[in-house]
Image 1 (spheres, helix red, strand yellow):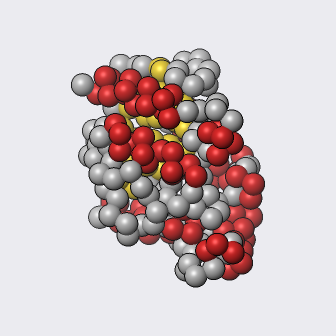
Image 2: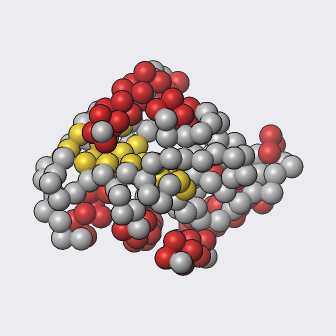
Length: 223
């Protein structure tokens, strides 16, 4: 019931006028390649195993990805990098994430984001991020087995740290860099990775091997 109530709140959220206008505009206008799709066009809640020990935090839904398919990291280039990596690491039952009814299941992992609506140019502003953080906080609270948080990109990394400070947690100095890992006796370990965006993967800033190394390290932390 707690998950259901949270999901209902997320799906009906209209706190950010700019994001509401953009996500609905994209859903109406559509991209030519997806004209036959009935776009989701609403905020996105997290997806995965409610007993997950690993929570993966991204930036926001892609306008023609999750904003179209209705599931995090589904139907876009980021998902086409992340989900195969999860499959190789044993967290996903299949290597593809095309739409919310494609049979994808996650084991021991939960996918979410700091912002729940597709932002113009993938750039949410500070107020929009702040409006969404309570949703992330509640999702994390509903993951009783959580041991590792993987932040994909600096915005996700900084957003998670901001959330800890809001909880009055004494957050040590942490710098974002790919592969960085911060541990604490009282908190889940925080691991950082470049975001699997097309900008990073097409330029070689993030490779499949680099992402596999991150999940291998997390696997050792969870054994």
